[in-house]
Every structure is written in structure tokens, then in C-alpha cells.
Length: 417
Image 1: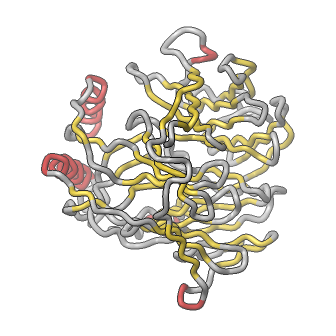
Image 2: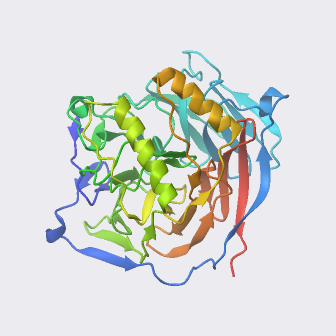
Image 3: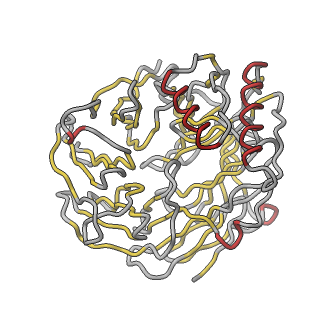
């Protein structure tokens, strides 16, 4: 098994070789200042076109856990249900077409669907974490072949875990178990496993790791992931274009490699956002609550900074565009009955009830082309909206309803001026 250490500037794929970018002092860094006008215009709006899902009724439209969404070229969409262990196809209007697979160990069956990804043209790849395998289906839902990932990927939901690239390789996220017990006051040692299209040899690619400055424990669960209490961290994601994108959020900068060995650093100006008093109080309580649960195992700070870093996470879509979740001013929203019930449920499990989380930031996403061109800013309809696929001006999200039911929604990005 080859291992390629990944530094701040990720790596470049050339043919079947993995090239580690040289140290920053020894290479050219192309800085792209993305402070120009919004290419798509200001005040972009999401215009809903299709919504798939129901609270109760026809089981073909009831989702237990949406594990992945892949829009097809002809307008249909594939939706994986990680609870029912089945993949469903819907036409452009949202009408059900067919079911694919089901629970089981056999070919075309699934033990634990964690994600979907488009694959070479009109095919779709299904990542089965418990089976450690990828199942490839053609545009008609016919199983073509399966590929062993050769890597124990994460079975935890949430966040980007599975990506296919233009060379047909599979990227799977997991934990470096050899280093897991040594982690104190740092990120969990996540790694990416990259399996070639034909299977076989596996490259393990450690994420860029840096000490966490400020609190790491605690936080607030959004559809896009966990918003930690404003600490500084490094995030590494594979792009469908075949390289790793790296971001450290103590400044507004996203870095990706070029095939000639240089790197591009996309930078954008930003103004620090103050952490308001009541917002600070809730995150302090959250950090103290979780730190108490893990007492003695980690050495994390519970001190909340005065200002927020420029952003808190990012996502890469099917066109290799980068969506940056920028920190903005939070707004108060009273706790719902469902949230109160969930806190009480967790209190019974943990022996102590988590604090209320009533200050929320609107999920505000800055959108960039891979070359750094700034397209505009999109605000998701709710804190629990999760972007899962995007191509051109279409954006697919997974959203929660009043009774915690799930919907798959297609939006058109419009309204720019």
C-alpha cells in the first residue's frame, strides 16, 4: 500500500501517479484575488422547481435517511435511502420510476449505503461502507460491476465521505486507527483512501493536520455539518477533478494544486463578525457540556473567541466548484418542540441534558469556479438544508420537515442583478 503525505497544498494526480506538492517556499503559488463583482449578480435566490418526499403514505416517497443524490443528464435523479438500503430513481418532475437494490449481501444489494456519486458518463457509483465496496450501475439501473474499496471507510453519517474523480478513481473517507489513540487537542486523524477505477492498489492520503486553536468540543449541528465554536481548523476534500482542496479558516483562503506542480490559492477579503453575548453563552455551555462528557480524554479549550473566523466549512459540487460556508451574524430562533425532545432524549442517554441552541447563522455560501472566479452568494432556506448535488444553475438539497421527514429538493439559482 503506497502512502502519500499531504501537506498544506494537497497533491496532484498525473496519470496513475500521486505527486505531493513541494514545500511552499520551493514552488510557485498563484494567488487569485476573488474580490471582484459577483459574476452571476448580487442577491441570488433559490427558486424551487421540484420537491420529492411525503410525511406519510406512499413508501416510494418516504425517506428514512437520504444518503446521497445524483442528478442524471436526461433529467432524472437517483436518491439513496441509507435506512431502507435502497436506491430510487425519479423523473424530472419528481415521479417515481423504479427501485434499485435492497438490503442484503448479494450483487446489487446493500448493507450500509453511505453515499452516491456520478461515475463516468451516465453511470452511478454506490458506496456501501459496511461491505467496503462500490457498486456501479448504468443509466438504466443495471448493475455493471463491484469494486472493493480496500479501505474501512467511515460508517458515520454526515459530511463528504465518498467522491469519484474524472479518472474513474474512488475516494473514501476513514480514520487512521494507528493514530486515533494519540489525538489530544487536535483533529481526528481522518484520511482519504483512493482506489483506482480497476480496483486493486490503494493510496492512503492523510488530511492536512494542524493544531486546533480555540474550542473544538461542542458546537451546533447544521445540515451542512457541525459548526464548531469558532475555532481554527484545516479541512481537506477531494475534488471530482482529481485533486485535494485544502482550507485553513484563520483567513479566507482555499488552496488547490495544478498539474504543473504549482498551486492556486483563492483569497477573498472579509470583515470579522463579532460573537454576540447570548451567542457566546450558548457555545460556552455547549463546549463545557461536551468536554465534561469526555473528561480526561481530551485537552480542549472551552474559551470562545471574540470574533468568528471567515468561514466554517466548504463543499465541492459535481462541477468541481467550491461552496464556502461563510460566517455571518447569527439570529435568535426559539427552540422547537422537536429540538427540546431531542435534548431530553440525549440527557437520558448521557446523564446530563445538553444546553439549548437558539442562535443560528443563516447558511450563507460563497460560490467559486475552480479557477477562483467568484460567482455569487447563495443563502440556503434553513439551517438544516444540506446541499448534495449541483450542476450549472441547478442545486439539489436535502431538507427536513416539521415532523423530521426528509425531502429532496431541486432549486434553480436565479435572481441575480
